[in-house]
Length: 431
Image (cartoon, rainbow, N blue to C red; front, side, top):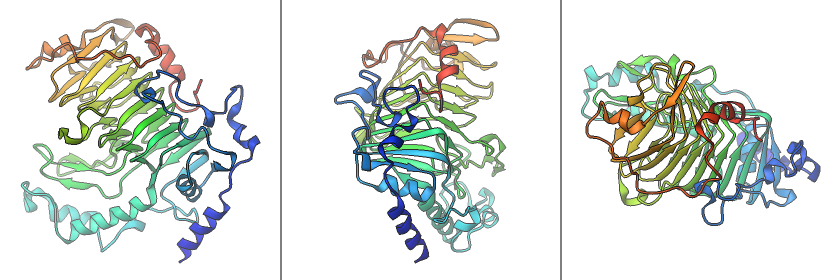
C-alpha cells in the first residue's frame, strides 16, 4: 500500500513545466531541444511523415523530472509529450528514492551459488536449458528487477536530457510505439542481477542478460541522437567467468528488433561494451522481412567488441562512423540473414586488429562497401572491406547489397570523420 500511495502522490505532484522552463535548454538555439524534430531526409526515420516525437506537445504535457518515480509517471502520461530529464536518475531505487541492490529483488530463495551448483554442465549437462525450482526462482527475481528498471516509452514522445542528465541502471523500452525521439542522455550500466545460463547457446553455452540501455521492439519512426552509452564502473571486461564463459550482465546498448522499422541512430557514443547494437533478433523472416530499415551515421564506437551493428533482413545504411576498437574485438559489422548493409565513408582505427575481421558472416551474402578508410597509427589509407574479408574467408561475400540509399543529408568525406565525430558525437554535444 505504501508503494502505491507513494506512486500516486508522485504522479499527482508531476506537473508540466511552464513556458519559460520549456525554453530552459534553449541556450543559443532558436528551437528548444525538446521541440526539435528529425531533419528531412535524415535517414530511414525520415521516411513518410518523418519523426517528430512529442514536439507538438501542449505546454501542460511538457515535464521536467529528476527521480525515477517522476520519470515513470511522465512516460505514462498522455501523448504527445516532452520529458526533460534533469540530473542523475537511478532505476534501482524504490518509490521513495532509496537505493536497491540485487539482494532486494531476490525471490523464492534464489542464490547464485546454488544456481551455479545446480546447473554446472558437469551436473546438469549441455543438452537442455535450466528448469526446475532454482530456474523459476531466478526468473521470479529477474521479474522483480524488471518492474523497477524497465520503463516504456510510448508513441508521440520526446525524451531529452538537460545539461549532463544521466539514466543509470535503466532500460528504456520503445515497444510497439511510433514516432519517438531520445536525445542528449548518458545511459549507464543497465545491468541484469540475474543472468540466465543457456548451455545450448553456441558450442560452449552462454550467459544471457535481459536489458539494453535502449530497446526498440516492434516500433517505427524512432530517432536516437547525441546520446552516450556506457557501462560506467561496471564494464563487461570486469565480469567473472562461470562455466568458463563470461558472466554477461549486459545485453545491448541499443537494440532494434521485433519487426521495428524506420530508425535513425545518429551522433551517439557507444563505449567499452561487448554486444553493442543488434538490428533483428531472429532468423525467422515471417515478421522481419521487409522491415528493420535503419540508418547508423556519425556515431563513435570506442572500445566496443561486436555488433556495430549486427544486422538481419534490413536495408541498413552505415556511414560516417568512427570505429576505435581494440585488437580483442570480435567483429564490427555482422552480416546476417537477408541483410543489406551499405557501409560507406567510415573510418576504422583497429589498434592491431585484422581488417579482414571487420565483417562477420552470420548468414548474409553481400555487402556494399565504398570509400572507407583504415587508420593504423598515424597512417590512414583506403580499405576494401569485402576484399579484405574474402581474402581469408569462405564463402566470399558479394559486393552489391542490392539497394542505393537515398535518405541522408549528405555523406561527409571519410577523412573528415575522425575530427567531426570525436568533437560532436555523444551527449552534451548537440549542435
